[in-house]
Structure formats: structure tokens, C-alpha cells
Length: 522
Image (cartoon, rainbow, N blue to C red; front, side):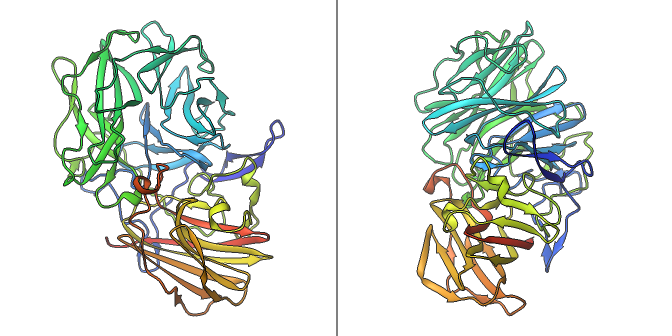
């Protein structure tokens, strides 16, 4: 899916619209340098797959079955464009289509993607300064354009799950076991919040991520229960059911239906699950989980088969979520894969690249002019310049950036968690600047000659090295090696992952010429 920047005459600020020239923002897997573009592929090509089906940080997945098509999105937090819509026809191979959320409204999390009355809706809980709220956007086509966000006025609510009752009324379930009725158009509330479930067990402080589906005579509510202690077993999946959306609700005797039993397991803290029928009529659970020893990758999308019991409950079919599994029956896999290498000849903002903590007019900083992506500088250094970030899923990888600096700008390449946790190298003012664990090191600066530069980062199991080259000159290693295994949400907070980042700080601009990526054998 190629996206183009445009200005809407009816609304201030930039929006992203899909290009009529392409419908899917993916391409065949490419080779970059001496390695394969992406090492981690779920589909093994022999009728089996291995989790994660979407590697890298894709927390709180919400999935929609729409005929033979499946669509999924996930929390984008403070990145915008966000809420990237992924597409699949077999639940294993996923490619990005477009970003549904093109305007920053806060830290977007735990959404619900639904279709009702021929229209697509995305309910988006957000953290704002001093407020938690729920917004909704809608579109007649899954590719967009999507509407402006509508504030539902649900202060203090996080996590959202849409449901249609037995009488056709629409409802929204939110965290803490609460429900509110929606107007028929789904764009406003039509009542007050009311309690739905009994309180969580004492050891689990919050009921979150409610997803509601109807099968046969029952409504099923699938929720995440969170102990908030950061432990491998701190997240679990629980189920309740009712013959009416209004209750009463019965707790599943198999709860929790998914949890980490031991820190020796490969996947930790699984939660925020959705249930979906596969293309062949079998049923699957889609949820997120961390990978043991790879916390900086964030929460990745896992797929696990479930089976229905005679008394109308469902259970996972056993086995660890990372074991070799047979693919869903009847799917039609797409041969396309998302290649991360980018020559900046077409717009991939919102499909691959997103600004971190952007201002309302952030997209005006970026301009494609046939010679690459011209990125106007912002702030003074890496932490305050709203870098362009990219999710990665390989445990080891190498990336290179070729760029030019003009004016008093500083351009660079980094691994970025948030404004408090990052490592990277920048070039500007005739110097090479080094950033180490959230700090700019004034004592570690080397001279840099010319305007055109190349930077390379090599990430091998949390050990990071940077190299610099001026123009077409030789590579010179930056004089440090850093372990970044601690740059993840349990240490720095923020619920984020460690992402590749390109940045332009200061006055002036940085022209991004070429970005190459390759996964390395882990």
C-alpha cells in the first residue's frame, strides 16, 4: 500500500490517503547486502507455522474476519501515523495495508476493529495528559479514508470491545468489567457505564482488553487479567459467557485458559486475546506475548488453536505457543512480505515509518521530492526531535542509512525506546555525536567531513555496534559496544519496544537517501 501526503481543504493539517496505484504496502522479500531481508517468517512453507505470526512489537491485537479476508491492528501508543491495518487470508501471513489513525490524539492502545452495517469502525482508547478517553473512527473501505476521531466522552476508560446485543443494540465494553450502550450509528454513547463482571481475583488487579463475540446461544467475553508485576506469569487470559449481553455472566471453569506457568517457557505474559474462526471452520486464539530473553522486541502476535467442548466452552488445544503447528485449513497465503529496506522513492509513512510523540502538524516536516525523503529538523537532539521509527522483529539484524545534512541540522540512526531510553549516532555541525543509554556524550565526539554520510548499526542479541562513513569513504567503528537488553518496558516503562529510528534534529534539514535492512542469523 503506497500512501501519499495530502492536505484536506475541509480540515486543517495533513492527512494520509491511499494511492490509487497500489492496494497493498508490501513486496516480495528482498535481499540486502549478504543476508535475507527478514529472517523470521511464521510460514515454514510445508503446511506448518511457528509463532510469532507477526514478529516485533504488535501489542493488543484486534482481529476482524470479513468474508475470506482477515484484518488486524494493534496499539500504536505515541506513534503516528498509527493503527496500521494488516491483511491476511490464512491467519499466518500478514501484510500492511495502511494506517487508519493519521492524527495524533494521545497514546492509542487496546483498540477494537469491527464491521457493522457495511461500515468499518475502530474504537481507540487513549491516554492523554490528565485524561483517559475513548475515540472512534470509521470508514466505508478498510483501506480508508478513515474519518476524523470522535470523542465518545468516556473519561477514565481504557481498552474497548464492541458488541451487538441479541436485540440489535450496540454496546462498548471497557476495562474494569464495565459496559455502555452506544447509539445506533456507533458514534456516541446512549447511556451510562454499568458493571458487567464480578471483580477480578485479589491477585489480579485489573480486568482489561475485553473482546466479545457471539457463537450459538452464548456471548463470550474474553479478557486479559493483569497482575502488573512484570513477571512472566503476570498476564493471563480469562473467559466468561452469558445468554444475554446484559448478563448475568458465568465464569469459565477452565480459567485462566492461557497463562505462563514457568519462566522456563519461551513465551511470557500472554494476554489481550481475540477469538476468530479460521478459513476452514476451525477456531483460533490471537493474542500477544513476550519472548523470553528478548524483551526489547516487545509484545508479539501469537496464534494458537482452540477447541470447543460439549458444554459450550472453549480451551486451547495444548502445547506451548511457540511449538510447530499445522496452519489453519483452507487459507490462501499471500506471497508478499513486508521488506523494510527503503530507497525513499515512494511514501511509506504510516505503513512502515511513524513519528514518535508527534505534534499536530508533524507530517509537514516530511516531503518526498524525487531525491529522497527531506525531513526538516526539530528540537535540538535525538530525544526531543520526534524521530521516525520502524518496528523490527528479528533477534539480530543490521541496518544502514545514507543521508545528507543541510544547514545546522543533525541527522542520524538510532535504536529508540522513548525519550529516556535510546542509543545512537548522529552527524551534524562537523562532528559525530554519540548517544548512549538516553544521554548525549559530549566527550565522545569525532570530526565529520562533508554533508553526505552513511551510518550502520549491527544488533546481535542485544549487543550493538555503530559504524560511520563519510561519503563513499571507508567504514570506521564507533568506539563503543553497548548491551541494550535493559531497554524495554519493564525497566523504562511506557509499554514500548526498542525500534530502529531515523532522526533530524536542530535547524536545517536531513535528506534520507537510502535505508537498507537485513535480518541476521540469531
